[in-house]
View 1 (spheres, rainbow, N blue to C red):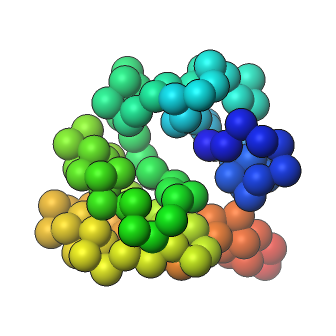
View 2 (cartoon, helix red, strand yellow):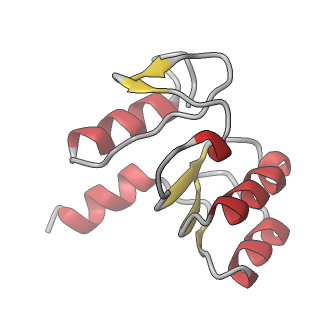
Length: 114
C-alpha cells in the first residue's frame, strides 16, 4: 500500500475497509496505514491471508506471487493495468485463485450494487 493518500491503493483499501474487510498494508517504508499495522512483506503477517491485492508494475509481480504461494494465500488479485501471465499461471499451478487487470473496488461495487 502506498504511503501517499492520493494513490489508488489507498482509495481502494479505504473503500474495502469501509465495507468490512480487514486490510493489512504491505510497505517497507511505513509503519501503519488506515489505522492498521503495516508489514514489510507477506511473510511477516501473523495470520492467514485471503487475498493479495497487487498495485505494482506488471513486471514486478513475480516475487510477490512467489511470496504469496509461500505463505499460503488463497487469491492473487492484480489491479487494473497489472497483467503477468507467467506469474498468474504459477499461482494457478500452486492452487491459488487469480484475477488480473480488474479493480477490486469496481468489481465489489458492480457485484453488490444490485
